[in-house]
Image (cartoon, rainbow, N blue to C red; front, side, top):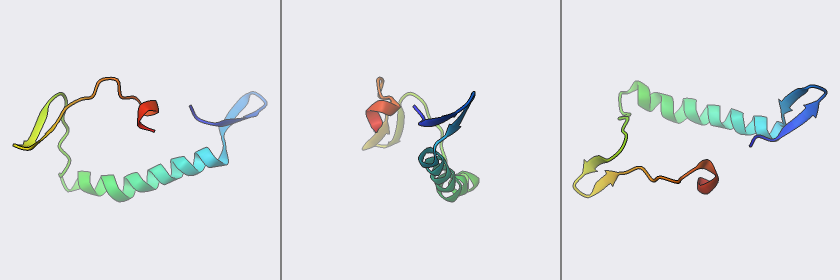
Length: 68
C-alpha cells in the first residue's frame, strides 16, 4: 500500500513514494519502451515454451507481497 501524507481532505504521496514512482518511470522509458519499439516483446499467457529447455508457466498465488 502506498505511503501517504494526510493534508486536510487531500491525500498526497510522500517524497519517498514519489521518488519510487519517478524511478519506475525512468526504468520503464529507458529499458522497456525501446525493447517494445524494436518488436522484441512477446506477450504470453498460460504455458509458453521458449526452447526445449526453457518454458514459462504462471505461478498461482504469487502476489506483490510475496515478490517483495
